[in-house]
Amino acid sequence: MYLADSRSTKAAVAPDTRPGRRPAAVPGTVLALGAVSLITDISSEMVTAVLPLYVVAGLGLSPLGFGFLDGINNGVGALVRLAGGHLADRGGRRHKVVAGLGYGLSALCKPLLLLAHTLPVISAVLAADRTGKGLRTAPRDAMISLATEPEHRGRAFGVHRAMDTTGALLGPLIAFAVLRATVDGYDAVFTVSGCVAVLGVLVLVLFVPGRIAPVAAPTSAVQLPQPPMPPRPVLRDALGLLRRPELRRLTVCATLLGLTTVSDSFLYLLLQREGDLPAHLFPLLPLGTAAVFLLLAFPLGALADRVGRRRLFLAGHGVLLLGYGLVLSPWHGAPAVVAVLVLHGAFYGATDGVLAAATAGAVPAQHQGAGQALVGTGQALARFACSLAFGAAWSLWGGRTALAVTAGALAVSAVVASFVLRTADEVPT
Image (cartoon, rainbow, N blue to C red):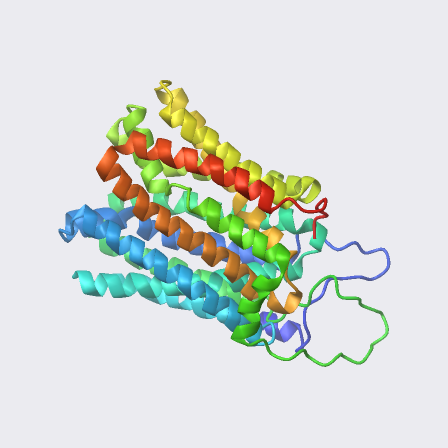
């Protein structure tokens, strides 16, 4: 069944380094992982697009209850990410196995939604789905890092995020098409979503290698004895990565900036209200951000390889701050809405894959999973805390005041982060 594993003949997959052969800037492994993410995101976003309506209108759950449910499940995913990264590293670079468990668990949860009609059951299914996402994220990013030459990691992550975002664009469109074409719309969406998720797992099994050797490792045409495998990392080693100054700086800055990053849902709601956007156009706002992200992910990733990933990561938050300013400005109407969505998509293009590429250069190959998990978990938990704080601030002061305070905090955080990350001139690694 594991065709990709059998092709490796129990050897780690390494780039072709024969004379006259130049390794591809974006290896086939990255494209295969991008295809898996594209398909999986179609499945996930199909559910995400209809879930609020399903639980609020269909099952009678209050919006506050849904917000709490969604927040708790996001927190579960962030915490599980640490376990996913550690397990992948401890397995002797068998990141595919842990990622496959994550993808498989999420695929199993989609049809289980057909049986979920009460809050406890829905909560359990969504928590399992988020657990799967948490398990697979760090091993997936580690595989991208290991398969790509260090100087090309920015564009590799850009290509992956572009393919992932294509799925985020297609998922809601397919969900709405299924709703319009069927009588039992929600059940049909969950069923189709489950089938698509299984397809993503099959692509992972068939086309992603089981073991990936770091491309920077020296190779030779002469068969040399294989060096002994390093001892398996233990959890203490994973947490000890924070003693590495570069990784510690990235984690601190990702967490600090995440504490002042408003969740997409709150931003879209503010944009709709401040921009006087008709309610029926509200579902198009996430598609606008995703479309811009899709267009800019690769070029901004390639730019990060040239100008420095930490520098572009900070610049991306400056773009987000400008977007907040436009929401608060007296400029209203469709042009203002489009401008904010462009800036929001550019923010993701300059930060999402770029942060993963920067993290890859800050940790050794045998700890890629744990390193990605540490930075990603810090950022995810910080954004979760920001969502709770922003919701409370909105209730107390109103949306505009809450956003103004958050924008001021983001400006301060960006200045602090620029000092934290200020080291010797960055050489992309």
